[in-house]
Amino acid sequence: QVQLVDSGGGLVPAGGSLRLSCSASGGVSSIKAVGWHRQAPGKQRELVALIPHEGGTSYADSVKGRFAISRDNAKNAVYLQMNSLKPEDTALYYCYVQYTTGYNWREAWGQGTQVTVSS
Image (tube, rainbow, N blue to C red; front, side, top):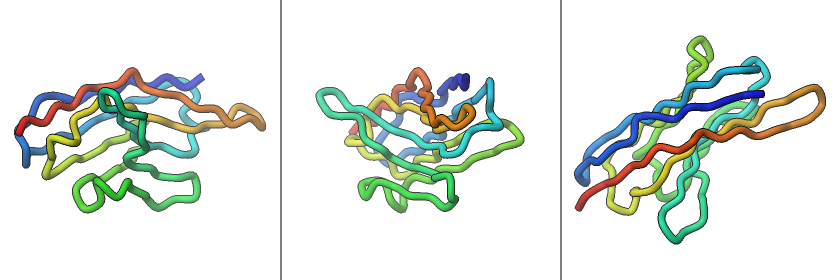
């Protein structure tokens, strides 16, 4: 069972930067895909960035060129570097992984870390 702990959120002015971190434990060798989602008040949770099982990266159109996802397998960590932040980036950000147990694919989520961007 993979467990995730998110951190790094905070309050920043528009144009600022933050780096979110996600620490994974338990069954980390079975992790296939990693990503970050976010959910703003009154809105559905949306995928922000993803490193899929087959490699490469993908981003929501709204964050392309501003956010960068990375993975450090040696530290069992996933990061989201967020630059040029906008007020509309304000949301609760969740780390997300897909992993396998035998032939089954499962998901794990972090507890969320709040990002607030002031105008």
